[in-house]
Length: 361
Image (cartoon, rainbow, N blue to C red; front, side):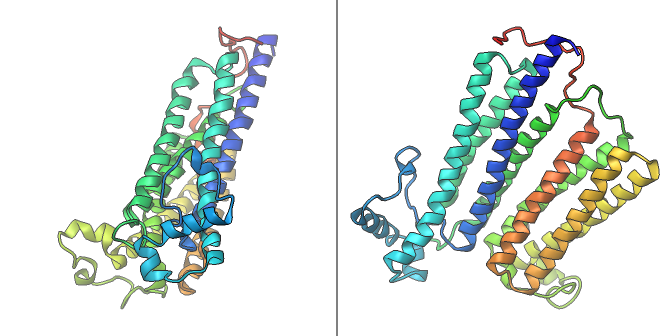
């Protein structure tokens, strides 16, 4: 490897480590967000203060002020009337930690990114992509507040559609960061696999995003507290049409009818599991070793995730099982994105690649 190629490989490795650190923070933030939702802590901070909100209350008077603000919203009046200051602090810390992690992700992404740009380490083909990811992160902060706003005036919780959009966007950002990090990994040649395997791996990622969206709808509607049987749901394997489509206009059933949303979540899970198994069979049949390893890991992870989903449902979604189910969902997404990237053949070439012209090394 030439000196220029060696330097470029070192730059890419440093950027890959940075992006993996960002991805790890997003993973953690999603888990903390899940805990915040499960403990019904998300409405404990009723203002959006991107800068001054970094600091929590620093005095007893500050805590009293925050508590009094919380007492003005419907959730307090209908669900937590008379909550003690100590109990309020518990839910406040969950939401504050979630918001702090969001700010931390922004800083951990932007500051090294600007440094890499200044040093000339970011190749032109990655600049627009990374700026776009940063833009999605900024949008995520706005979406988070938009979600919280839905629960401050009339509702006692946030709108489930906004919750689903918030989680889905977080997962899209996570996947984009992880994909870019994997594209920066050092390899001297691209992986060549059958196009059908690449297509299947890509479709699994797409279906996972759809499943995450509907899983968030189930959570937002508290759908895990009803229809707690499996494989039956309601009165059989398939709910009757009049139960699935009783809302008007009909399309609202797909987002607002708890039975329909939970049924959708189940059906997508079955489809996802079947496609993962077919993908594994096809990879083994074609004797593509790089595809077999990832397909096997993905099939195992999806099977475990499905089992956790069933167990969580049967036990009426206790916090520990629900959070485990969400965390395992992120593990499945991680494996799926890495696997699809490996099969895409889009890893950055190192051997013989020129250094960026603006390099300051």
